[in-house]
Image: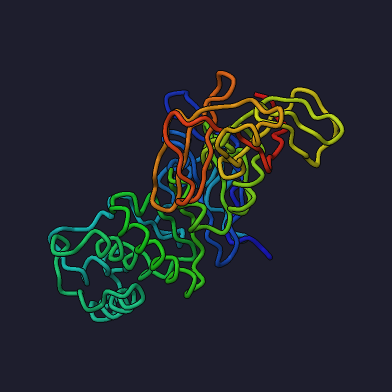
Length: 348
């Protein structure tokens, strides 16, 4: 499939400090693509470069055969055919929902036609019945959908979402995220989502790019970046994990809580990423020891559907996750058993 958008080795710096360094990726027609990383990693600047709000210093950005930006050319934002939903929604407080949704449409169109296109966009996001309301009479989720409708009204080829759900409370954020994703997939709209929330990226996008210090460390499906991280940063950022340095001999990796069979060639000083859900925990007894080093629970978090425990073993702390039926208390003596791990090839 031919990419809709191609970002090729773009670079941007502010005050001689690199913010985006040699970033490359493609976005395909109808795909939801996420840029995820910690604050300051360069993901929003990358989004602004694609939108045309910033100029690239090297590299190029193109849609199909059309170059939008390189070292010599800069197509202005309004001529790129790209929609942008800002983090704060940027609604006009003195305009009603319909006029906010129509704002991005060309003034060359008759007012009646602009309103018809805006109303159609509001229908697509399920809030046409609110077209006469003012922004301050809307909930956060409704305001978010007005901002989305304003972008959709211009019929963009690509939609950019900058932390669009971050201002919503947890329950509303999840519901709105699902509703927005359904709309985007129904109309096969290509999307780039910027977020610092790894759970949001994993649940919303079809492919994820993890950024760190202005560079992309890994691109893949949500399952790939979570289950098979290529770097320590990716492993740690995409969810809690236990990083363990060890050797692999005859297909066995030794861990602080027992040996683990692993499909990897013999090697010294490798790094293992073991997710908390990939460690079994049992209460300490003579029957469960089997030459294992005992540990004890030093902290626990109850999250409704599961528990996350911090377990001290041999002077180090490890995270273990169990379902809501596995109850342990702080101070309980336990033993751990690893059941799955991923080798991270770098050792940094």
